[in-house]
Length: 257
Image (cartoon, rainbow, N blue to C red; front, side, top):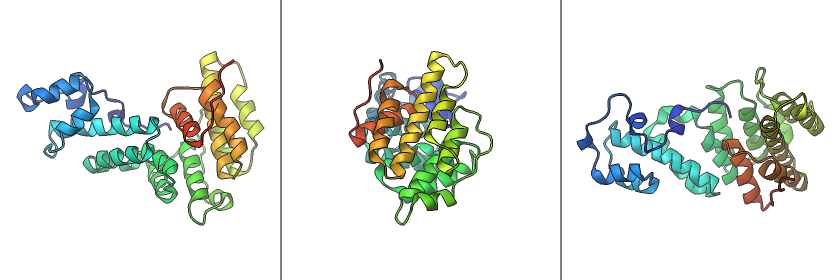
């Protein structure tokens, strides 16, 4: 995904980033909270800010901690817990809902496909040229009650200018206008460096796997997710999505050669 609010990337020990340019007086933060922040103890921070006043520095700290823990729960395969933390984060910052594609991905792995589809529809309003958003909307629509690949394709979101390789070919695969081979050929075309090539292939195999899963080809999906989560492993958010997918589906990642 290409849209991500700055708050999602804040680390708790950096108080100046959490509280903004006008820092709260030290006495506004209790010694236990300061200690928890310095130790980067997310659970403790959340516990200590449970009764934070609306719009207070403590509430801002709590929101960041909830977002971080939601992501950590997701990466650990604790999908229900990740959704609960993302919900609590959005209760504090409801204006962030359209930007919250992370919750949409958690909805997919929770089997809450209708909620996932709706989340990605809202995300489309603030990030209209992201093939990944269109794809996750597609797979949720395909797997929701009464859904199918044909119905998802009929409502597939048109993306015209996502320049990342091989997003154009991934979009065409889901649209029924391209093939798996097209995606892989695009990913390996040109002379990308080793890191760039691995990143392209991580994305390629992840989205091929998701397409095959939505199409009912569990065996084919497993082959591709084993590559995305293993040989072409990346540790950014979507790379970790591949790793979570493999874990939840019981697929052993293929080791690098």
